[in-house]
Image: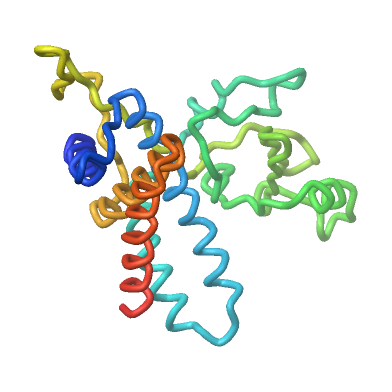
Length: 239
């Protein structure tokens, strides 16, 4: 977890240096959530890039371990009752994935892993011969247009009994009260800190500064964020 107030105060201190500008709470919350989203989505891009680079098993293992630590914060699962309650369209056995799910990485049918197939392979598997046909011991699943289909024995659509996924980060919110025309942090029940790994605090500050600079068209603020971001990336590469 990264405390939202500490990030905001750091951003303000850097943006206000030499009277460069002020970032309102509303602006900060907007920029903070955009930065939060960018960093989170970058994890999956980095995993794919590392896996595709040939001849770097050691590097991939290091990247994989680091990203696994950062992503496990967002890993969750829904069981039989929850999955059965997912909304569906015309067919009650074709389930629409809830908005809180970002990416599904495992689907189970009675504690057996389903092979998650693309739409073409999924449809072909359903009409294949008995040796390749799906079964309760070799179930298959498909996600198309954010809708989940699972097939077991007898080519029958069934409800998954478990879905393992990465959920989306909660929306960040810096809450405040106005005292003498100044916004003061109010650590209320509506406050939402960043859920990202603590190591992302500096990255968040850099990205928010860049977004603030673009919004206000102040090149110095944007350049400050870009400069610190480049330094951080160079340090990460060397390490």
